Length: 439
Ligand SMILES: [Zn+2]
Image: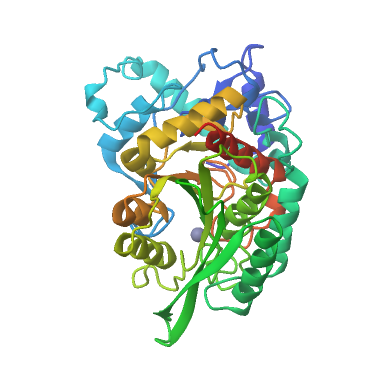
């Protein structure tokens, strides 16, 4: 069907005065779109208790992997069962349970009369087309939402955090064993040492997946209060993917990884300003993993080389004070930040996840959404599976947002500082630091 925004507007204006609210394929209020006559905007400003006027049951769940581990495509139809589970789990703010969703009574989405479903499909179809058309225009700016209900306290400095993100990206691409990586390591060492950290590189060698050459790989570890017995691991990957291979126009182009690679590091750089304020027995290690995605061919090359090495070393030579818990920051710089429970984190570190989201709730950081959404394979898997450190992945995989018409910045040339926000970084640092304060 070919249509135009004008026709869509005319069609929707023929509805009564009530705004027509359409929930997109994700079925979640933050992703709903509201028709405000001038265009579609996100429904995040809509009172949460107001039920959607029209909903569309998704054809399939969006089961994502940050890596190609599960599929060549990041977003795959995970089948009917997963779809059902998603609909149940995402029906409202609650703590998801890993138990099979079929055990959870839910008929809220089954009892829709056929006619209503048909009408919904037609209207929602038009809406999705409209969203697709408009997403190239001014929609991006319209729906960027503040990550918190209240102002983020000034010490968690959004401008400073954003400055770090820009400085990291100014280095250029930073894949494993590149000149950019070396520059970044020197930059980070200076930064963390200036704030009282003890910095070391955990170095090893790997084979270049393309050439077979032996090349260096190193995790960077910055520690605070090494004498303290209750230790926490905060981590991120600091390598960038060799190419923006999901970029439709230029898959062999330049990839600076502002969100994917840069945001976690910028968050840890900001965090370092706050590590003099911790409970008296708490110490923290900030760990930046190399070779999270030194991947040239998804079917051939391995992910998580740095975190796997770290986890193996940890297991072979356990420290005197093992980590109480770990938090991984990945893709936390999105301007439209929404961090859902990640399913592997719930599987391995449920308690930690609940603690963090509870802190976010207390602080009014609405960017943390207490529902599960994606199952993501990331650096937290080796930490949980090999090292046995209960580690949660804080990740907003929908970059910039979910929805059929939304642009996709992940692994493209559009993963740049302009699509990130210091407010998002500061909000995440605030939550994680406050969580540490409560230990
Ligand atoms: Zn990536």
